[in-house]
Length: 370
Image 1 (tube, helix red, strand yellow):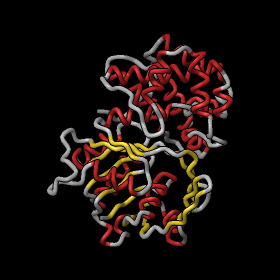
Image 2 (cartoon, one colour):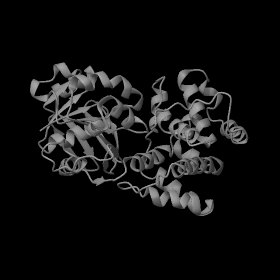
Image 3 (cartoon, one colour):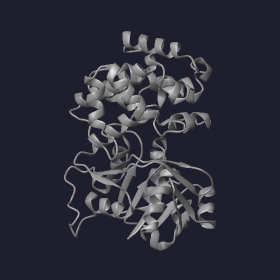
Image 4 (cartoon, helix red, strand yellow):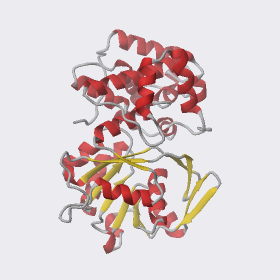
């Protein structure tokens, strides 16, 4: 059995490292710099007081550079940024894996891959562990979580079918044997949309304002805005007959109920503790991308996707649409970051206007959804 992990970021290396440590035959497809590091040294994975040095047997920046026995692998595990999914299709076509498991943030990636390769070859996944790169080939797990997995095809073959590809149950066992907490789901959309709800928290608002998460959550107005954006997204889910589900280490369904049913005086301190606890100085993912000068943002597949889904369902999501519009125009340079940097009142006013007129003239809510 061969596994190719596509993506050399913290999550990709974490998954590849733990699979390799469990003696799976693993290769990594990544950028040349990462490939060189993996060829020259062992991967270090650190969590609290534990550390493991792990040898990655194969690393390359192109499928053609892999050893022949790693081509057409049993599975490719996709761990790249959401905006790179379309560009990845030629690479996956060349690699030609038996199955593709996407463990990416945001919505729409399963549909993109299924359109290119067929839904029966695509598996959906989420990871709730947080990890960061702390140097060359050094991954630190900042918060332990787990992996969720589900089939994309509505009538996927059972995992013990000798004539079909391995099912989500089989790969759940492989990942479990590699040390991950794994949960299987019947509905991949409920799983992925629930993960997108988590990705919303402490992400766009501190990024737009260029403020620390703790400072944002110390402002009751911004905390209320965070809660309102979350509840708006949950309402879109329910409009599409999707219900939030609990995820490994994160009771997302319970959180959704609490944020909608309990008073701010009760739920806001709980939300603040959940989001800021144990975070340290780690920047939100959208914030880190913007600081690196990246012109594209995964916010498209979170806030933009919720706003697009609302439109498709015949309703609106003005808070999510506004957050994505501002975030995107800052990333592309259309809006100067200083326009909103440490200016909560300006952001709150923009959202207020959008809620008054939920069909702005320039909504930027494109996303690929089914």
